[in-house]
Image 1 (tube, one colour):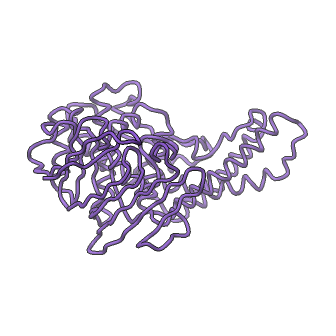
Image 2 (cartoon, one colour):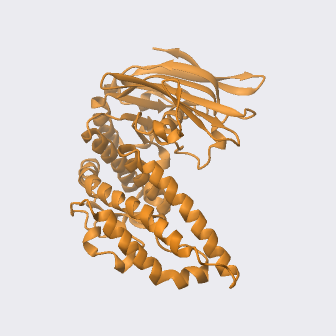
Image 3 (cartoon, helix red, strand yellow):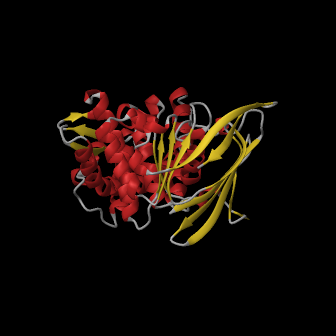
Length: 390
């Protein structure tokens, strides 16, 4: 898979740009603040319908504008598709596939598969559980786009149920007659998400262990474990990453989910929050017997973050098509061994898009095309420009 063309209108610092791309390695070169990362962020958005840098979409629309357009032409196994998304300030976003309107923006998911490694990835190791939950869910949705609807449904039910619990916590007169209904919906959607996360952890773990061993052979061995809010109600074998998932896992999990919701109902009503569900789970990362968070050195944290992305890349590749590998200003942060590990993967990838402030940061063996990026002052402020290619 590779991106043949990228076009942006009023996206971040870009007023308008169109770039033709080729398979192989391309470096977007320019000083910090010139808009290099915005190019990768745009492609990442088309792949996941989210940004790796911000939680909301408002910052993606150029200052003073009411909407933004991101478009790309993707070639996969000889088939070419053009996708674009219109981000609208205060209105619903819209998507098109080959210029035909999509009923929902999530219909474009799966057309472009990307793996992005960026400085923000340190949060996967050092950050809150939400960072790791997002990592699991975005990777699962990349592999199985229909999960986007399940995630959307779960989030909607969670908001409604949480609002009901909050009302009950404030007033003893709150009507809880619909709580059983919300419990059923929460368990139905949540069990699917947890089942897919457990399956993903089972398949990802061998790639992760091997990637970390190759990057940091002198370090303690890595391992992962899924931590579930279902607690002791969940059969312990479900958390064994060596266990092969089976078809009825979601059904078993749904029954366990409902059981645990009944157990904690009084606590939830008292506190006004939903205490059970995939929104409270975590992917625990270990080095030896210790959690990486709080115990890993800076170098080990970088190695772990890089290993998670390389493992994701290899897993998607095993599905049958190379994802686009995107490396956002990371070579300058890595030592020789980590650079070498990343370069070896990049050298064999169908398409690699790299940003760098200094050309010397990119390993020479990658033999990349160079796209120079700069900014200029206009009446609307500083805007980014592609000034030359070579």
